[in-house]
Image 1 (tube, rainbow over the protein chains, first blue to last red):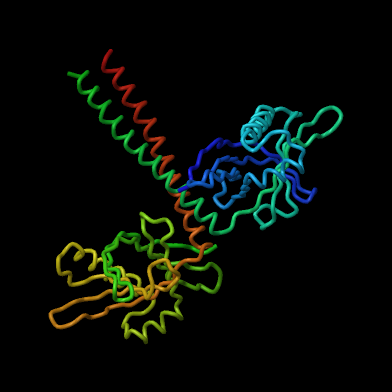
Image 2 (image 1 turned 45 degrees about the vertical axis):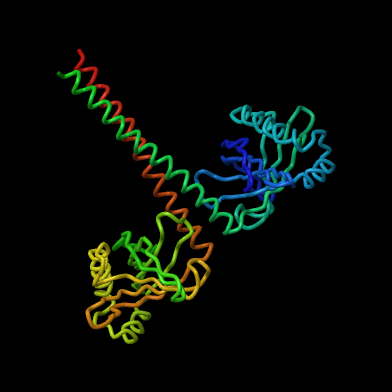
Length: 189
Length: 189
């Protein structure tokens, strides 16, 4: 069994750009997990998921293995190694989050695609810093839209979690009613 | 937009038979809906769904149009018409439900498949009456396993419902706490 460590699950504002013609703001949830396979291989994958809390079919995935990371590092001139990368990525996302309500954010997340979202085309997530001189892309990640099978398994997992949360609420409700009713009776005596 | 009327959604025990080798009891939910298309066609479809509350991937579908029903009627020697069929089917399911805890049920639901469930093979649901003389099949319906796309849309719908139920519980909990705390303070004064 693989071990899964959730490093981040956070709703963030992104600037959506489709074919340089459409531009609008969107809230997406970015979830970052580290998957470590058991056994002697010690293979680690960084799994990044983009979802939309209001649209159950919205699911984009990116899996970065240690080997993939070497190419990414060279391509984008990164100076950190695989183990330090997740935290750096999270720091960048937090910087964007802190700026997301500003009129002119210094850091912003841009999601771009050559076709409308969920049409089956990949989507690119860029962390962009804007200074008085130019736009600087700190990181650029390419996500693939999930297959029906992946969406199915993601939704089954969401359903399991929401059902659990619902059950916890149900128990809390009946316990609260019980406790307070008991206190009420006690006080009335 | 099509109109959907839910006629039944009920958990029922079925006797599962795989390739005449495996035989065990299973709880499945049978949901019966009548879908009426809008516009001048007035096309009606009876949609029957088998799901398993404990397995999000378990989904079998059967859609019976008015034309399909004519073949079914001839094949199985049914004496009711399309409009009366859903209620007759529900009555049969209820008879099975009433007998499901008996050691020798007179009516039982049997689900059979030539391969293990969810392997992609169709499954046949039979309503069987057992009298001292023989087994009588009252109805035999052939279900198709859902595609990934259908499971995806079914799960998205489940998720929407459970989220709504969770929100109702959340509101009830905070209202209950508020009400009872107010009463408690009032009584203590």
